[in-house]
Image 1 (tube, rainbow, N blue to C red):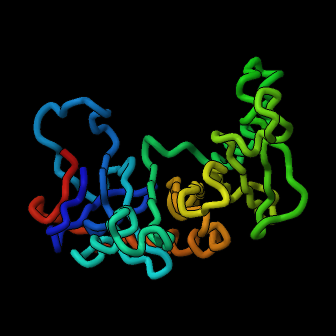
Image 2 (tube, helix red, strand yellow):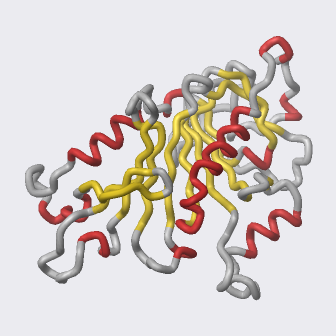
Length: 263
């Protein structure tokens, strides 16, 4: 479900990772609750009324960094659209400040510790040993030194077919990992190397976990230009999402007419 632009007072309610939330329409695109039909499936009967106990499973939104404005007005929509419009006069010499945020919770939450498991799986993969020699570009080795406070891993070696380092392959990704004081992964970021050194068209995906405050996975996508600001992006997005929380004592029933309900 895509939240419509002109629903000025509409919002989405539900349980996000164990926390009751009320989300403005411009921060609630493609909303799904636990039990909703899968992709391509049709709902049987009308959608159920949503309450603060209805468990959200996924939704997303676009937000502008660093002011964290959503697409809440025609002017902000226009600003967002300009950065993907090659006919806009500033298109070729500007980097989009709009970042794409996706959230997974409820039945789609991958579970406590998923960041550690995901990074461990990436670092353990060995294309030759695991029987996938054609996927050598997915191997990782640590790169000396930190970058923006992150440990860097990149595909090692050279492709015998092209003579180029695997790191320069169109499908190669650098892996950036941050570990907390307990040495557990608390953030990881993958960045494509295609189109380098042009940072405008090179994409990073940052993964964070809001647990224990909310059992919610957040994926944040942005131009690689913004990688040096990963901490500010993480903090700003986390604060925004945590700000959707409402006081459980004030979560009285809400009329269906004021909600945006997934079809």
